[in-house]
Amino acid sequence: MTEKLKGIAGSMAAGKTDILIREARRCEYRRKNIAAFKPIIDDRWGSSDTIKSRSGKEFPAVAVNTPLEILECVQQLIAMDRKPDLVAIDEIQFFSPEIVDVIQVLLEADIKVVYAGLATDFRGEPFGSMPTLLSLSDEIIRPTAICEVCGDEATRSQRLINGEPANYTDPLIVIGDDEYEARCPKHHLVPGKPQPKINR
Ligand SMILES: [Zn+2]
Image (cartoon, rainbow, N blue to C red; front, side, top):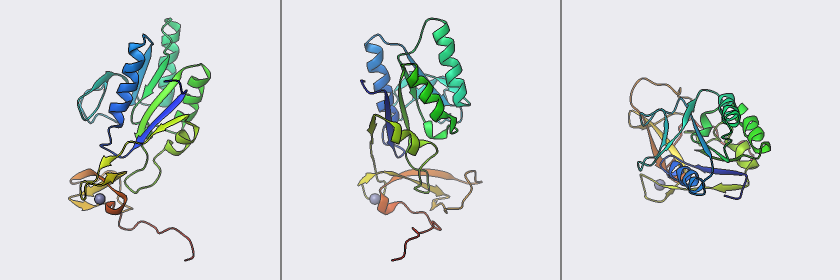
């Protein structure tokens, strides 16, 4: 990758992590050093020391609680004469806003960064630091999934609680069956979502 900052943004099940792992592997084939990270919150697929895609691809990664831990880890690698050429970060939408500063510091140290994340949350609104990161990226990849209702291209993540579309104001932690499906914009349902405030 020639770009300094590359973003992979999409809905769930769009293959974001597959693309992230491909980027890391390509760098590896070129005998470059790679350091991969993910937030500790992401233990969907069990293992805490790898980035794992739905299709089963895996790449070794360090699970961290905060963006600063990424910086600390990279500084340790530099001290051991193993400076990474590329830092890969999965599920970046879950990190606190300091992730933007951490990435700037990495780029200034001449380290390339590739990240993957959900562009929008279950409400269909920008997720965490994704809008800022995408605007700073040299290249953006926008993979789509398949809508589970109509088969069209899905760009949204539909949240279902006990099989029904989650309400705009539903808390993120619920008692019951909390599921997500890839959906196209037409079939992305968010009851209670405020309408755009424009006089029409
Ligand atoms: Zn659809």
